[in-house]
Image 1 (tube, rainbow, N blue to C red):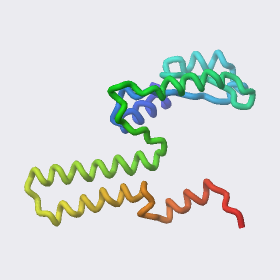
Image 2: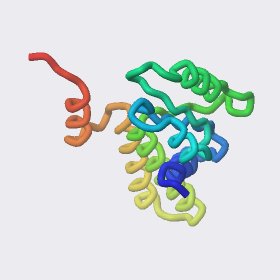
Image 3: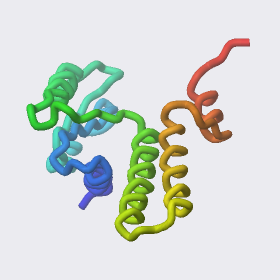
Length: 148
């Protein structure tokens, strides 16, 4: 299995939806042999090989993204998370809440449950902005140009 394929599978597992639509985009096809790329990666789901520089296959990408964005009736209530940091925080919050549920079923003391609840709230706060860390602030400042 190619490294890209294993990364796609991991993302699907993390999202909790193995049937999640996947669009795999390979850019800079102007620098590589198109047929060679197509043959090498033909098994990847939703494959689009394009050249942003040459504006090749951009319409194909738009069509694939539009198709992936179509929400079926059984997925209508689901939320799409587009930030890896948010996805990780949601995953960690869910893990903490699962520990709370298990603790309730085992009749653990509320003091022990409070620790996991606090952990879950912390991870949700990382998404809402209630919690700031040096790493988060560094990430923000590295991605945005702030004028002097």
